[in-house]
Length: 102
Image 1: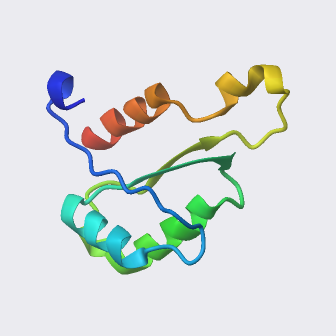
Image 2 (image 1 turned 135 degrees about the horizontal axis):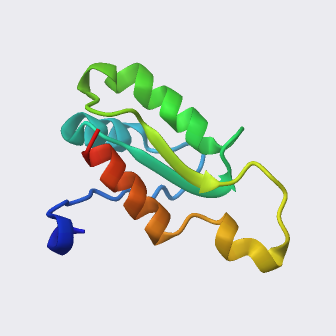
């Protein structure tokens, strides 16, 4: 994205779901004003919702766009359709483009 669109991204790979490194997340969102949370679990009741709520509480005035999620769908799926279900680099790329144009 940096070459094609001039967009640089800060990527944080959480090593644990709980406890997660909230200070690093808050520092990043405060700096960039944007956040995309991605995980393979369904969107509903996923850890992304908890992280999103925490960031909304602590970074609301710093946000330049809504916090977004790229997750698995809220539906059971057969393994043969896993490539359609899981987040992909293209789904994340599309979400980044939308947030940058918000």
